[in-house]
Image (cartoon, rainbow over all chains, first blue to last red; front, top):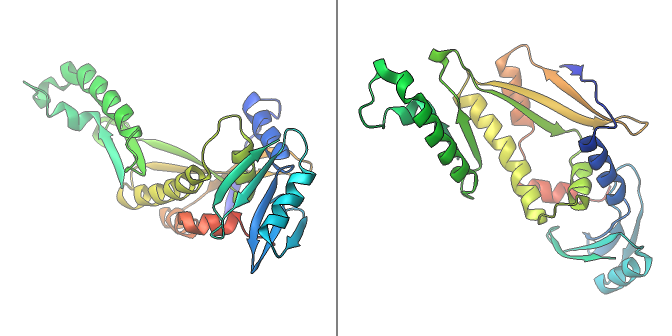
Amino acid sequence: MEKTLYKTNQNDPVIRAYKKAVEKGKKNQHILPYGEKWAVTNLASDKVNHVIFDDPKEAIQYAETNATSGTAVFIHSSDGRIKERKDY
Amino acid sequence: MAFIVSADEIKKELTNYSPGRAEEFHRESAMKADKIFSKALKEPSYIGVILLNGGTASGKIPIIYSVIPDDLKRAFIAFLSRDRKFSDTHFYKTHSGSRRTLLWIAKNYPDVEINIVESSYTLDGKLQFSQIQFDQKKKLTDYLVSKQMTANDIIAYVSSIK
């Protein structure tokens, strides 16, 4: 399967907005089901960065304590969908 | 199912239309097609809406360019941080629906040119786009089959922890 690479202007406003959203998004915290437990993670696949809790309330408390201005905490339900978003 | 809007088909429904006078009806049918297309885009039951600007007989073949991210989790991270806000359900529905629609078009409309563009990140953080070349239609179809994900598949993928 061959690929032809397009020239992409990294300063294009659309490209910059997308990259900015990715960088900003990596600072957000997600509380996800993790087996029988709950994990706090930034979702970024290139970096394992999660803390495990038995009780989802403890996970939420941990994420809220560590939330910085301009970031968000996403609380997922046990099926993985987002049930709540908290902006800081 | 995808909804297809064809100005050529709309022409046939217009009063006094005859194939020999098709050109006279072009403007009216195109305007109607635009209206129907706009309305169809708002219809939640359609997974895709295609506006055909002309059939193969007129020499105008619809061309589709579809961007597929190499990393759906990164796309989800960006989606949640954009200025425009949508529920996460929107992400699952659109990413599963667009893949399903593309495959459906590839199977049912072999004349439609489908171009797949993959978005990816370089190690030094540059966003790049590459068009994937398929020398046979079957390879494109096989690729689209391999990319099929239901909304639940996407939920499971983006919420998994490696």
